Image (cartoon, rainbow, N blue to C red; front, side, top):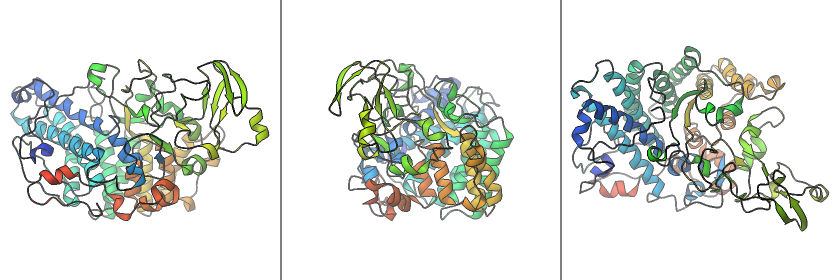
Length: 540
């Protein structure tokens, strides 16, 4: 922790490889299996359990592709190998690499956690007061890994014991049983974790309560849930809001300040990254994926400030043109870059006119309305109004831009990923209360979030009434607040709005999306290497 992340795989065989007929080892160091039975080895195993969360949150394209693509928020840009997750075409199948990568990574993480939990009682010399805290951390992480799995794939295999030999069989447990494991782990974590961590980045009691509130909110909408889950979700969210020192930052834009913004009253728990290339691995690569192709246009060249444009995800017309109240809501301008300043001075031809651009002049403008020929005649720079925006030219989401990179080609990033923000606790409470029929109480939590987002003098205009509050409004508000933060596909599935809203707001995805797309396919290699039956999700 404290920006010192250890990437240690301290087990020999894991579920994802154990279903194979041959033992497959994931060798990451020369550390022997006995090392975990020492106090230093046990502590390293706990630290190593955290590293697997990065396979989803920022460590490459798998997590962001599964959670951002194919929603009402983002559609595909020009580049990338995983557009099928947006297009819902035949490429979205059990052999798609990111489907397999996420499955395997989460199960590796689960077995790492299992090793910590199963060996804790036998570590000679381990401080008795520290042991339940470390086991609580591992159970928090194991719960999170299972939560991601059950939301993504539905019924999954449950393993709560360390895998130490080849296993050839596996079963898909009912989601009720998966949720029971998740909740039991989180109940233990809540009971044993401290309110604040000894090292920043470790799991804490409020982080476990936050995740548990989200688990209850999600379970309520499944066959395993009940209305009582909404009450539990709301109570936990309210406790996080009022029972600790978390608070909404006064300025929404400051949440994403690199450095200071990564550790603030807004952050309940974050995935840690570092500028140390030796320990950080890929770090947080999200800075790559939401950027338009600016670097080939007149007056521009790639630089660190504007980022390396991978052009993976572009906001839908719904997000750009309908979602935000631009006159009163600060969040659109806070997170979208629409003006690029020249960093390659020279003489250029733009719309048939010779133009001289100096460093710092406007070089690109991506407006939110059309311009007349007369208006364009007075603009000595490239302009891309809505009618000219495409898979290469679109407003850039700035939440993840990373100015600490050493050069313009560097793909790894050092930003922390803010997994739990206190603003989400407000909206979890609002949704849970609304679904419990307590719309009046829910309204305050929504309006608190909207007040923070208001432009100066616009707080009254940002307040909504009880009659405006419904599940679509909650989803809109979550989009305004958490745009691009790897929640959207889960939000739409949880609220049973995925197909409806994708058909309405994402033209590229609307053509092929079907009801069965509320789950991703089980990886084919998992099915192939399992002795006996391991059923595929319907439709795949």
